[in-house]
Image 1 (tube, rainbow, N blue to C red):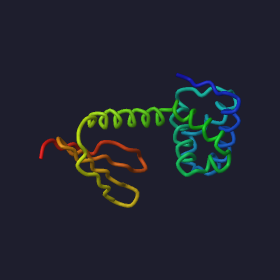
Image 2 (cartoon, rainbow, N blue to C red):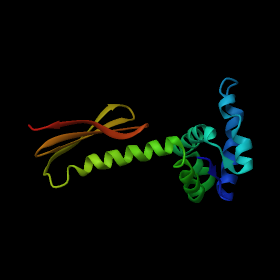
Image 3 (spheres, one colour):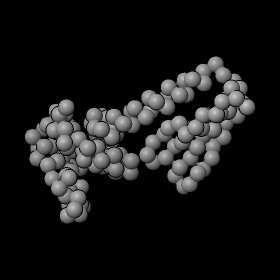
Length: 151
C-alpha cells in the first residue's frame, strides 16, 4: 500500500535520498531511480518501499540520521522505516522474540550468560527450571536461536 509522506518526512527523506543517490554504482542506480521523484510527489509507491527501507536502515543503524537530523528527525524517519518491508520484518521479529520470552513467565531462572559467537553477534542463554532458551543478537536483529527442554 503506498505511503503518503508528511511534510517533515518528505523534507528529511529528500535530504537523505539526495545524499544517497550520488554514492550508488551504475548497477545499483536502477533500483533507486524512482525514489527522488516519489519523495518529491509526497507518496511512496509500493515498489519504492524496499529501497527506502534499505536507505533508512543504513542511516538509522550507523547513527548518521540522528547526527544530522537530531532526535526529532530520527524519530520521524524511524516511523517511516516502520512502514517499509524491512521495518515490518523487524517488528515481526521483535514480536516473535517477545512471545518466546513470555513463555518463560513463572519459571525460575537458574542462570543467565552471554556468549560472543563472532564480533557483533552475541547469544544470551537463559536457563530455567524447565528449559534453556538461547537468544541471538546481531546486526540483523534479535531472535530465538534454540530452545532445549528438560535437563
